[in-house]
Length: 414
Image 1 (tube, one colour):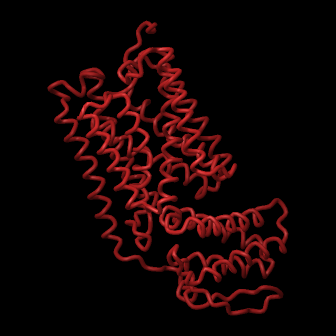
Image 2: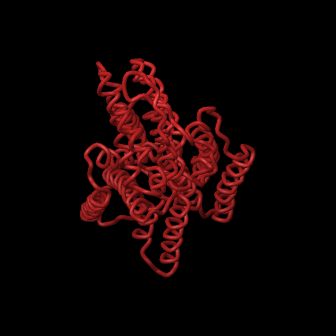
C-alpha cells in the first residue's frame, strides 16, 4: 500500500534528467579517484567514506515525502561512486575478470527487477511512491552503476575502443535505444538500458576532457572538468527545484511554464555550454609541453644505479603501443636513484607523482594495449607497496623499482 502523505520520489524523465545523469557520473568517478590517489586516502578509506556519505544521503532521501532535486541527485552522485567502487573492488582487489563481473551484475539486476515486479506488479518509474518501491529503485540504481562500469570497461578494454570511440559507441547505443522507444519498445525496458549505458558514456566524455592531448584528450585535468560539470549540474538542479516547487513532479515536464520545449532548451544549452567551455579551455592551454627538464633526457637515456651507486646509462625509449612513456620513466629514474642512495623517505615522496600520473593516464593508455598496461600497473603497485611498507626494506624497494625500469626498457619500440 502507498504510505500516507507520500508523493512521487523521482524526477520526470526529461532531457534535463539525462544530462544531469551523465554529468553526475563523471563527477562521481573523478571525486573518488581524487580522494583515493591525489589525497592519498587509499581505496579502503575512500570506499568507507563514500559508503557512509551514501547511507546518510539515502536516509535523507527516504525521509522526504516528495521528490527533492538536490537530495535525489546527491544520492545519484554517491551511488555512482559506490557502484564504481564495487566493480573496482571485484576487478582490482579480487582479480575477477570484467567479463565475469559484467555477467554477475547483470544477473543481480535481473533478480532485483524480478523480485521488484513480483512484489509490486509494476516497474514504472512514475510509481516510486512507497518506501518499498523506493528501496527496490535504489537497489536497481546501484546495480546499474556497477553493471555499467563493468560492461563499459570490458567493452573498452576488449575492443580497444579508447574514450573517443567509446563516447561514439555508447552514445550511438543510447540513440538506438531512443529510436527503439519511438518505434514502440517498452518504456521501462528502454529506460533501464539507457540508464546502464549512460555510465560508460559519462566516463568516456569525462576522459575526453581530462586526458592529456598526447593521449587524444583535451587536457583540462580532473579538477577543471569537475568544476565545469558541477556548475552545469547545480544550474540544472536549481531549475529542477524551482519547477518542482511551482508545478509538481509530473507537471514540470509537460506544463506551459515548464514544458518539454523549454526543458530541451535548458538541457541542450547546458550540454552545449560544457562542450564550448571545454574546447575553449583546451585551446587556451595550447599544445602540450613538457615542464620537467629531465623529460628530454629520459627520451635518450635514464641514469640508474643497479647497485653500489655507480651510474649506468641505460637506453630508454619508452615509446610503445601504449604511447610515449617518457614522463613515467623520468619519475621511475628519480625513485630508483633515491632508493640506491638509501633515501627511502625521498623515494616514497617521489613515487606519489608516479601514482598520480599513472592513474590520470589510465583511460588513455589502457585501451591501447591492455596486457602491457596491466603488467606495468602491477609492477607500479609492487613499488608502491614496497616503499609504503611499515618498515620498508631497501633491498625490496630496489628490486621492485629495478623490475619496473627493466620492463620500461624491454617495452622500447614494442
